[in-house]
Image (cartoon, rainbow, N blue to C red; front, side, top):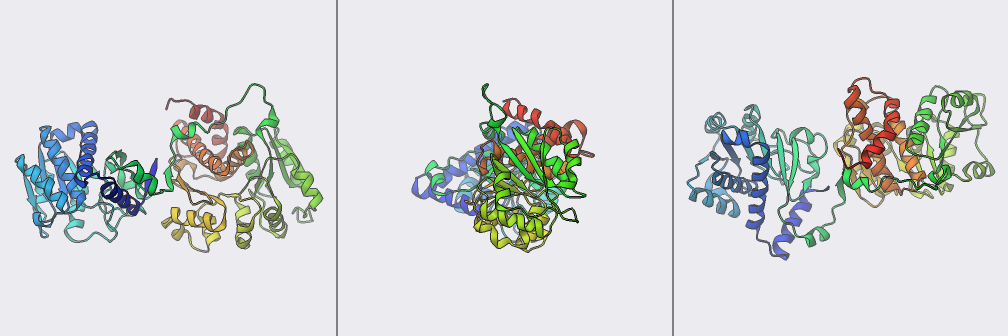
Amino acid sequence: MLIVTAEQMRELDRLTIEQYGVPSLTLMERAGQGITQAILERFAGNAKKGVLIVAGKGNNGGDGLVVARLLKKERIPIAVVLLARQDELSADATHNLRAFLKLKGKVSEIGGDNLALLSQQLSKNGLIVDAIFGTGMKNDVRGRFAEAIALMNASGLPIVAVDIPSGLDSDKGTPLGVAIQAEMTVALGLAKIGEVIYPGLNFVGDLAVADIGIDARALTAVVAKTELLDRDNLRSLLPRRAADTHKGSYGHLLAFAGSRGKTGAAILACRAAMRTGAGLVTLAAPRSLNSIFATSLVEVMTEPLRENANEVMEPLSDAEWRALLERKNALLFGPGIGVNDATQNTLRWLLRNLSLPWVIDADGLNNLALELGRLRHAKTAPILTPHPGEMARLVGKDNATVNADRIGIARSFAVEHRCHLVLKGARSVIASADGKVFINPTGNPAMASGGIGDVLAGILTALLGQGFCAEDAMKLGVYLHGFAGDRVAATKGEIGLIASDIIDDLPAALSALASSKS
């Protein structure tokens, strides 16, 4: 699903109207039709008790007035409360107000701060339509508007928001002081970024998108580089196996992972890679840990590395590197390796020389943060998989700053440093080096558990090894990771889920994704 910023949506509207000849009133009429249809499909019972349209003076209010007229034609009891004087309405809103009044519709004005009339109407109806503010709102909601929103939220009635819940920042998904708590939002034309990320998701309710007839040429002209991942579209990416293939057909992965006290990270990543379809996996780790890995990873080969007295691997020569990388198809660097001179030297060599697709995760990112300038000169652009804390270290900011602008920070970092990035968390953000961003809808709070990130790293590396480009590996891998987590949580509950549960479900999750059934 394509999603846009408020500015992009305004430009799409402008081009459709000014260049491609669709009158603005036609767009408003289509918007009202889409919202009305959604109301009748989802809230028919509530609507029969009466629908209260709370409208502002702009075109969002105009959309609400179209809904009022169309519902009245369906013999639904309608009341309209304007949070403005009639002479303050936009031209298109005024046109639709007159059309509603011609049907003998009832309209009340609240031009000041006396909201008693709104309170009375709230007690008489079964459904509210929020048509106060649209996507252009950027300042905190104050005065009678803030009070009206508070009254509407406290009413206990379901609220259908027109385009976006009033008071919600359409780009960042943050409430502007106070915001409508909708049970359903009908986005007009395209969904807005703030509607598909947190905290916006907490205000939007069920999200529907109404086709208002944006011209296809306008969509071509306004290049929107943000998408919400969709299961149906991802299905075409799923790997399919021919009958005459063998283990060498599905990639040989090399994982640099694990250290004393952190062997679990390496084990989880390697197991996840195998469960995602990797043909072969070799784990390179300090020699003293080999017995742990050899007994825990029956299907994985190990490459014991020389180590010093502190059980830290010794640097490899170029000849040793060539031997280690021979016939490998992808590389994972980081889970549980620690941060020390040896791991930093290893990362420097990989950035300078590695020609394989690769993933940097966990301690690999902590090593990278110490010498970030080397990243943009990497021979092969890696996929980075930071959680917000690791991302904060990479950009030199705090977690709150990262979480306040996850999309912007992920996109700018990937472009500036010529890499690919998965910023993990609720609604993980995927950013490509070319500036495209994808938002992942799968996953749940049960996945807030140690080792879940190592599983993702293994999944991504396995997909790279099977020949996926970085963008497709991230899209499918991140979606699959959360999808398996959702499946496990649905059967086991959200408390106590562990990383191994997700690994064990990966084959079945891949099969379920391939099916057209939900």
